[in-house]
Image (cartoon, rainbow, N blue to C red; front, side, top):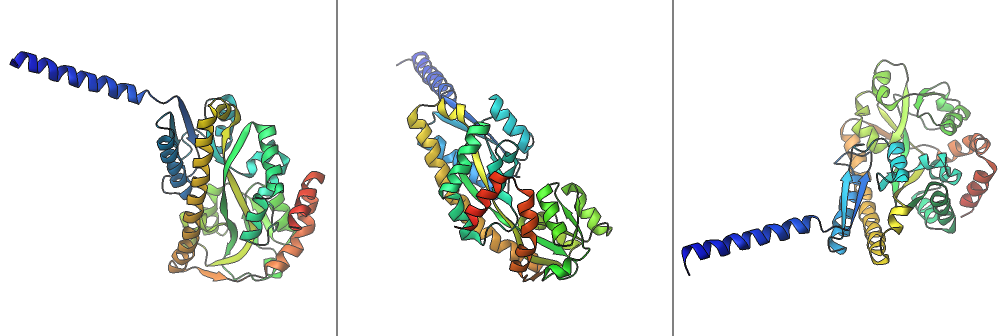
Length: 326
């Protein structure tokens, strides 16, 4: 074989490989744009990447999943709207869905759930299916998986063990009427405020306390301006990974099943990460000098209950009572 012929063969082989490579890059029949608000290190993003890995492998490359953390596709509400318009496909969202589906308010009602197991039982019960069905009907979003969120705890510079200890406490809360009403019923002085303003307000003593899950207490460095974590567990909640119904239904049934199966595996993976992270968070905050305080949660729940029920609609009260009865 001449040198010229050999070179032609090699060039042809490389050209063929390049063409095949470029075809493989274009091989995905469907692309899922998955945007969410958590940062790259957050366990939600790790779960989203696990979903990407599973879907792409189990669909033999027919589905490509593009994950956009850190609000790269916009805020939670922006991404929901984009999914409804067809310019995004998936996100992680929670009680914000009550803007369309009133039943979704149950995802974050103060002192609705007795403990972690009661929350899980609810999500996986007929009540949970009813909430999911209303979300899909009213928003066009299909819940594929759910993640437990860490319970909200109260931080302060004095220990809080009973509702009496809250008397007049200036407390930051998110701008959620149900949260404001509940803390007022507990004799605190709740002040709605943007999360970005909380650290400085605590530092300047404009407010004396705030409430959030341990993950946000750590990431916001509240240990620098607050001494106690009072274990109120006042809101236990969950969040859904959702996909646009029209997008899901545009796929053949075998690929829809790939997506659903991967979502369940992602849910189990996130649940493991969540359990490990909750243990790590308490130790990390303790190491940073915060003291954890046991609270009479029953006393808080009983005192807040009338205000909670008054804030709910008739439909929501029915769901509330059904969940309490589980």
